[in-house]
Image 1 (cartoon, rainbow, N blue to C red):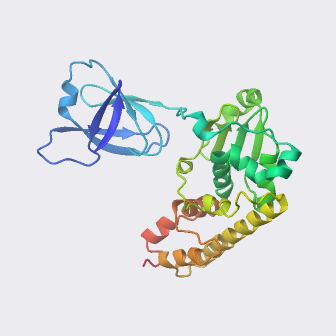
Image 2: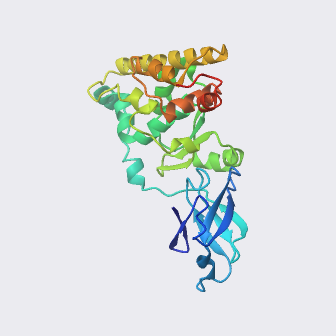
Image 3: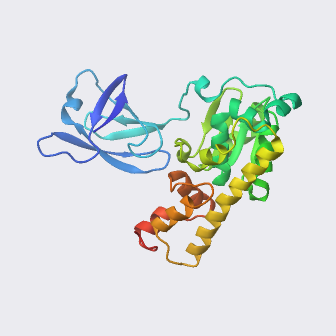
Length: 304
């Protein structure tokens, strides 16, 4: 069973059809963002509650139908009367962005650009790396973010940087850009001044310890302060990653037989010792337009 919320209450619902002993009403939800649909079953006694007279305003959390959060309006008969999108989800700012240091030349020489950025913008660093690896454009709303942030990623990716990194004022964003990006799914927008991520693809929510982004950045330790060495180290890591993804892409394009087990072995035997994770699959899907899950499931490639 899963839980959804309404009017400061919570109700438990079935995401699969319950047995005959359970008297439940089937409700079909459709996300107003991505239009994905799913049926749920709610106990019939819920609809006889006299405390609520007209429409139930039910908050549908992530994972019920998809990765979006939205509100469904449900009448007393169990019929959907409409939906409302959720523009933002609140987070505790301190957990995302600690207070920023002013990046100066002396501070760079003392700590190194990478260590400064990871110390003040750690969550954003992982998300920016994921954005670039999956060809997502980046918009940073800021009045103060030093250009070292943008320059750092340009330096480590070189000619592999396909994403735009745009640092923009809030005024320009509101007047000229917001309406253009409103309906775009593949875009990463954050307000550095407020510490708020305003928009991101659904697969940006989860960063496991063995995800590609953390593996790449964790090869640089805090003892390294020389920018040249740090940049070269990360360039080498990215080159290892791209050599693996390029090889896999070429083999699939040639329709050579390759199994899921062989893919795992290919990653594990690399210098980075990567795992076959969601983050790796997202790179293949969004950078190379290859859905590995579909390949394996449909047996276009051999499955072990």
